[in-house]
Length: 402
Image (cartoon, rainbow, N blue to C red; front, side, top):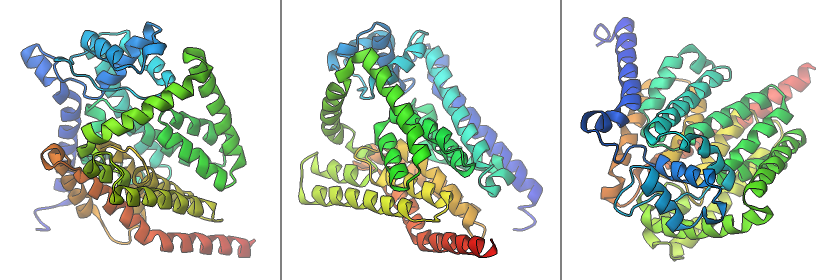
């Protein structure tokens, strides 16, 4: 076996698989359009963002969250047919941002979006290499694992934006490590494009008493609020919140099989009703965030641990995390790999293969990605006492040497 799997062969085969994954990620979505002159189904979630961008370009923020307006926009400008549409629930400024793409033909806009998200993944790996030596030593392997992870591939091919979220988290980590807290907070405010990530991150900055970072986040948040207010009026939060609540209830039924958070997984089976197990799941959501706040409030815990814990909490403790969003868990996976005492390459391959069971979520009626999130988070929890103890020991040694 050793003679069969020489270093040269492992490197060559690995690169061949990587090239195949890159080409399939970039070209496969366009194959139907190239072969049948049809772009039906092209872009996945991108149709919702493109349609919202069309409404933004027309200045129709008053009807941005009405189903009729979104249906009309997507029917006119995207491959959506048959009275179907994908709902857009993000703040108005996100619709404005996608307006730049909506000014282009749909296929061209989707190609740019796909390339941008792929670039965000590359950027996350490049910056991650400055934080974790194992990524720096083998960025190609990191990219191979990331593209082989079904949720991340779905993010890039399926027109979502979680690769951007992952990139922002890694940039924040890098800036905090460099003690550029104000800049880190300003970058953290970008997470407010998806409030279920942005608001909790500002909260952990608060409990950890990183006042400069929190100040940067407050400045960025104020600018974000002002932009939304200029677009949709000062009271934009009220209609946005109302529709987000209604959307969450409907989505728990319609897209329940893709729900990968603790609460979302429970609500998939309760059909958005508050059954006893949905109530227990809501209680666990609170426990997750209280635990995360406690860990962030502890002195001398290293940033790798803190960022890994937050990434897990952002999925476990989310009211609305879909299967593709667990792509952010590649961050704690990278920390686990960095700190592993033994080679874990074979387990990463197992993880990637297992992640593709996510394709069966509609047939199963529930998300296999939920269990993937539980396993990754469980590994972080198992290692957490050791990580925190090591952080405290390192801090004590530093004080003693001073």
